[in-house]
Image 1 (cartoon, rainbow, N blue to C red):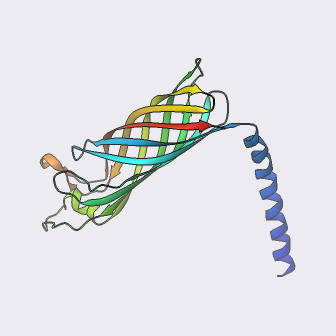
Image 2: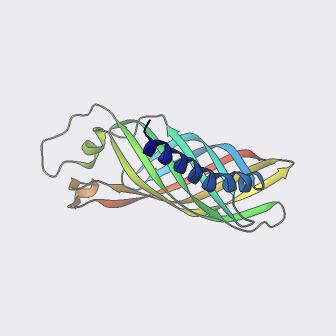
Image 3: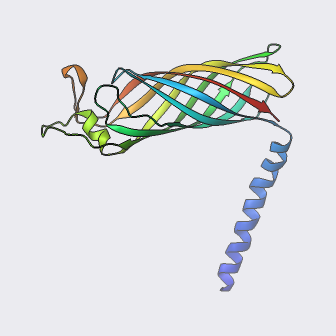
Length: 203
């Protein structure tokens, strides 16, 4: 290793320590919520309901604000009529905010992320633009945005039950041929009703 490399490495270690040591100390003083949930998402674009299971982690940064992350796996074929996806994986990472009202904590949420469609073999007609289902059947990762709210219910001790619902926006690719005879020349957002029910612990 050259002298410049050693100098750069030392500087990088100093910067990492400068940034992360205060965060570690701050994290130790904050609360975390971890849990598992069942998620239901009704696709407005394909008029089908998807069911998944997942895990979540919240880091309460302040009394009313928490960083919130979750990963969900939807293992069944989708959609109902003509399946074009064998499995979906969804990741959401954002912020929830709300006050503590006794055993309840209502909150609002804004969480961007992704939805990964694992494709399935389908027979697609050769037209332009192609059907949206055919584009997703090839396997796609879509931008996702979850907006809505919910409530945490303390059941005593460290245990918490959580309910949340919202509008999950998925950015679909274009040009594509949508259901109902519609054509999208550019990428567009579809809207899904998304509901989760779960339980966890606070530590």
